Image 1 (cartoon, each protein chain N blue to C red):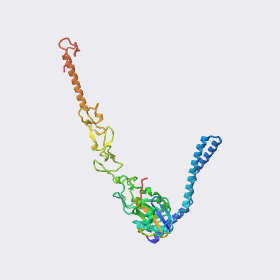
Image 2: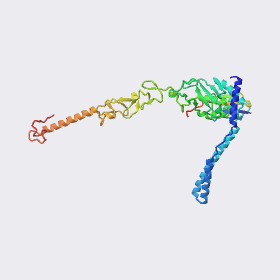
Image 3: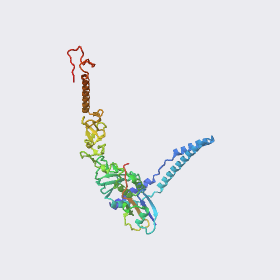
Length: 351
Length: 74
């Protein structure tokens, strides 16, 4: 940037900061706290006049609390106004030197007097082995000293697969969530330390906070389905309820009894109905020991074994009945005839 | 002698402070940010990189910016 252009830029930014400083601002007085104090004082006087000792002590405590709140709020207001009045105001030379120093710190520095913006371009930002490309930090000095007066533009976008507006773990829709840098950025902009502002923002871009990203780096390009190996976004993936592997929509199995999602290794097919059953819902027939879902077992027996058991029982019963009739001899029988005496064409069928 | 000390770590304050004649940049850093590694910071004197043994002069502007600052998602 030519010195004259740099000087013009410094002059423009300085002019804006000066204008901001000269704006007289009104404040909000703590009126509601004051009214509460007045009310408590009236109540306290009444309680003392009537010798209501208990009420008076309580009101006295409440009154003290409100007085301290009032004092704290007034101190804050006075402090803010005094700080505003005495804040360091950079000179045009300060801003000029800041701009010059940025040309050594960043790949490039650009600006637009018309749009009131100044930008720097970072080097490639590589976090966790993922190349996120270069970023342009664009400061809109019309909004100074507002700490949201900037945006972060991805010049070589490599956004998260699950959300293309997230171009950096801490940048969504060109807005940087500054985290720990909030106060340093605020003070740098309030004091017109333009170079410090850009360096601080750059430091945030170079740091990965795994505790609080919009999209984590491990999920940046999605995860692989454990069954088919395809990449699946965090919004579309399922997790096996047993082994916690990730699955795509096509590969997850649903356990019919519990409706849980599982991978193919954590389910088995019911021997009767062929539905998928997870290990928790699987039950074994106590007779044949084959695996079934709970719906296909009755009294811990599968249909086949139940049928067999019924048939055995019936056989045993019939044999038992037959033995009883035989053992009674040729004489008069005490067993009810199986054929009615008048139905001559019928004969008893003995099994 | 007085210098302008700008600490962009934590609160990000800028203050004029008194330092003894002959204090170097590294000595000032150790005083102001004890138990920290200089390599974790961008240390600039009058907006320029400098050697650790640079002896501070009256009116110098010394800034210290962490190389890593954690952002967030909210």
